[in-house]
Image 1 (cartoon, rainbow, N blue to C red):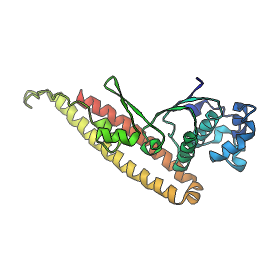
Image 2: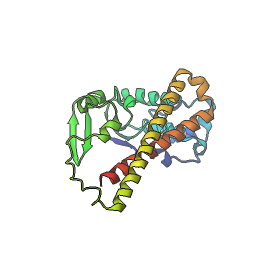
Image 3: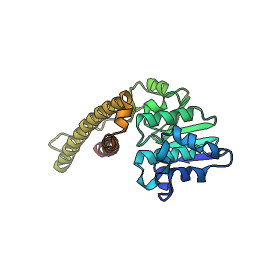
Image 4: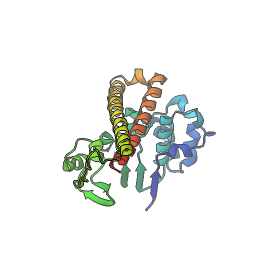
Length: 248
């Protein structure tokens, strides 16, 4: 097996002093070197963009370049950890098309349901120190779990937890009461901000899809998009942390 691995921070390993084109040429072999410009074009690097230095690229552009570079290698097994981070809709579609044409084995770690649709034929769920296999695509998995999205999976549990017998409030430690109240307030605020950001990002995705040429020419749009997406990821981590503290 020839195994290729794409990490969440894969773009950080690119050489900032090289141009986009040089990065690809150095990674190519004799067989695919003539195809470098075509591959770059399919990953939205066209014309003078291939002469940009890596250090001036945005986070999304670096991710696209790292993905294009990876696909130059003769791998027959690809392991990809959240490959759609920092990618807009068009870039995701480019990557998805490339992976659909990949003839080897593809192992994806992702929370992006739209991206996973049509790419997977089985799902492995890691939960409570166990691994469970679902012999179907991502929609089959969510249907089996009787949920609509991944957030609902995180909130739910295969086995109902035993509810601890609560002590009367009078006996409950006052400090713990204050702590629980504070955690619940923070959790509620975090959930509301997550829902609001998800709505905003959905609207921005729709705007990008409907009028890509106009939107893509506006750097402020992508800058705002990536900042909101990064903030959403932070909030999801905070939500998980607060939930664990509350349960504890």
